[in-house]
Image (cartoon, rainbow, N blue to C red; front, side):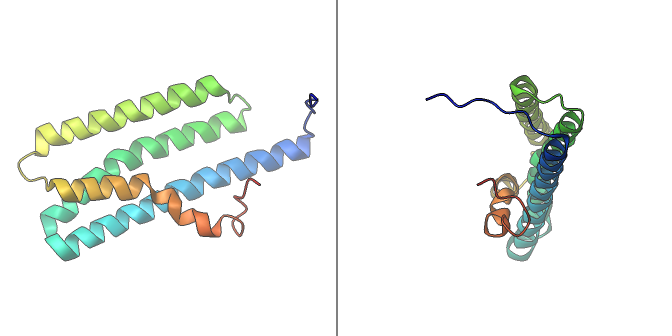
Length: 143
């Protein structure tokens, strides 16, 4: 049995837009918090160069992701989202991350502490996991 598509009211569209933008902002904030955790752990256990390496790894993901989130919020507000916007934006973000990591390896390869860089990258990448226990309280639950 086919379901018929229904049109959203203006109030429903505004609520969905607000919830989507709020979710994007919380995701970027959670990633920034996890970046800070990675830098702090690296500083405590391995020193200054490890902390800087963790920061570099975290920022290599956080900066392109924050720009992508801002672009998505703009497109959501303008009601111009679609699968093409998402796909192209995600591809550009991944290319930017790869390029930043390559530049880091070429320019700062001498002082980089690779395990710390990877820790910063991975914790930032999985920062959204901080939101999982709080998603209902924050209005991010999609169910």
